[in-house]
Image (cartoon, rainbow, N blue to C red; front, top):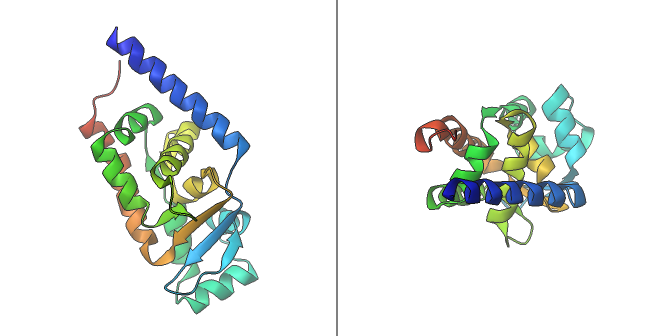
Amino acid sequence: MGTVKIKIKLLASIVTLLYTNSAIAAEKVTLKYGIFRPSISVDELTKLAQTGEVSQSLNFYLTKAGQNPKAFRNILSQEVNADPILLDRLLNNPIGEFLLDRIGQSVSTSSGEANRQALRSAIILSANKDNKVSLIEIIQNYPTTEVVVDGERLAQAYRQLYILGENLQRVLPTPR
């Protein structure tokens, strides 16, 4: 009986996440480097992550912030293996909330409100496609029109994502 309730809850969560994502998705990214906060489109970041091509404005901002576009691209596009069902289970308990808070220091809502929920949604939706998660996918799937990315903490966010994905199997047993 308990297993049926868990499956129903999980299914309801995924349906809610999919519905939320179809209604709203990030369009704009505010890159945060100290007091420097330029806005760029998610499309510009996606192009960098997928092709390595850096738009003129993004190149300008990264140069001003002292960031190497290739290193920035690697952090955005590195994938972590993650089963969406296990992710949902992990992200809905205290360990997962701790990791969400850590990643939320680098990727967050512009208001800082409902950040855990937004990140949880973006991470699970990212894993739902191909059992892999990357920071660019989280940004693309963020359920607000704007997402704030702390460029100085982006590598830290990837490390937390790696911990989340790669150690997931050890923390929670695979459902049968």
